[in-house]
Amino acid sequence: MGLVLSEEGLKDRQAWEAAGYRLPGFDRAQMIARTKAAPRWIHFGAGNIFRAFQANVVQHLIEQGDMDTGLIVAEGFDYEIIEKSYRPQDNYSILVTLKADGNVEKTVIGSIAESCILDSDRPAEYDRLKEIFANDALQMVSFTITEKGYQVADAKGVMFPAVAADIQAGPACPGSYLGKVVSLLYHRFVSGAKPIAFVSMDNCSHNGEKLYAAVHTFAKGWVDNGVADAGFLAYVEDEKKVSFPWSMIDKITPRPDASVEELLRKDGLQGLDPIITSKNTYVAPFVNAEESEYLVIEDHFPNGRPALEKGGLILTDRDTVNRVERMKVCTCLNPLHTALAVFGCLLGYTKISEEMKDADLKELVRRIGYIEGLPVVTDPGVIAPKEFIDTVVDVRIPNPFMPDTPQRIATDTSQKLAIRFGETIKAYAASAELNVADLHCIPLVLGGWLRYLLAVDDNGNAFELSPDPMIEQLRPIMSAFSLGQQITASDAKAALGDLLKNEKIFGTDLEQAGLADTVAEHFTAMLAGSGAVRAQIRKVLA
Image 1 (cartoon, rainbow, N blue to C red):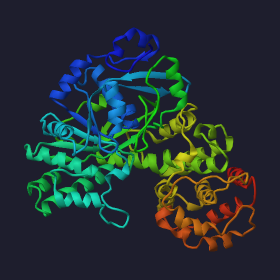
Image 2: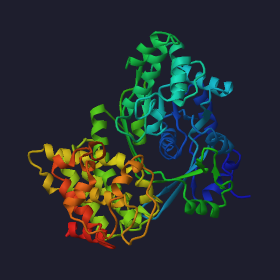
Image 3: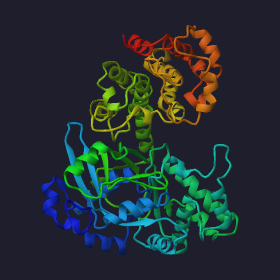
């Protein structure tokens, strides 16, 4: 028969444990009953990061006796995730932790007490969510819905039609994701203006601020239009009633990998055939993730909170969250990833971990992190920057079991360069002790990105650029260049026009920063012909 991931299937604990699975160490029926009666934590976004991180943290807290209730998860974008991957498995899932030393840890996660569908067109589903939001016990509502999930308007500031319609119609039956969430908050307000924390756990800068802005847009719109009680806006604006803590999350959870699926099949696990939903979500009963994880949260919970720190999370103040986020995004992790993404695509790599076996690329990211980035990091005090980079360079990125690709990380690079490199350039320019001229590897990466935009690798083979919202604007500029072209740096700089001065892309005007000529020199050197990218990397590292 094999192993079946369900309440009934897990009754055969001996078979699961014999296959190497760690099972929940608590009375799940009691946990579910307590959670339904007095829910403390509901999470929106039923994807991989939630199953690998938050659900696992809560499992540990329950097992340690530090929580007696579990998680409720809700999905508002792709309902089939709940219908096809949660409920058929009785809300169980499997976490496969891929350790850098080659060991694999398999855990059955049973901390999810209930799964909900955020659909205002289904009264039974929506009424259950209203019950949860009206409950006095509810302390936190958390989110992993991606940065795009908090946007209420397009790049030009024009409100999305669904949002505009919801703001006109009011909280009774909204259609947009955030409209539905804010309508649930409104239900909590009319049920007694009960306190709550809205915690974004998405990997984006100032996430709590973004969530507040979105919620506030709905609250103000409804009150202004007379479709909600006037006191609702004051409720949202009162931090003692509704807080929006900032957080910094860091854990790599790639799409469920075929090699992990095969490993579970060998264990005899049933029901592993992948499901692709109508919204093109890849659904599996397991999630694979790296061992390293960080979640730093501003400690601002007006209705109390679980003992999250006992689950390994770091609770601190807003300034510290901001410093940790800047440490990660601007210097200690994300710039290293982007460097590997750009040069990985150019040098023909398809796995990030394989790039760390390349002596040139490994040395490049070490220099970006330790030599060029570390001097401008403000130590947040809760995570040591050098130790963070040590783990990134020596454990996380080289992990051969993490199926991450330079092609995936190269997505939206034009949107990432400003924060990942521009902040360091600006910090050097503003420092009395540091000199922008001492930056060698960061300008090399910027020149490498321009070379990447030709969509031709270092062997002269064409490749497909990763999705990026700036591609169509950049394509005409880059069409002036080709591999093997003999061109001076000054001519290339002239042909690039104002691109090197574009602060939205680079975070600073590279001309004013004194780096435009250097970036143009790297770019033209890498145009020389096959092997020129590799040669230029080695020249900079020499």
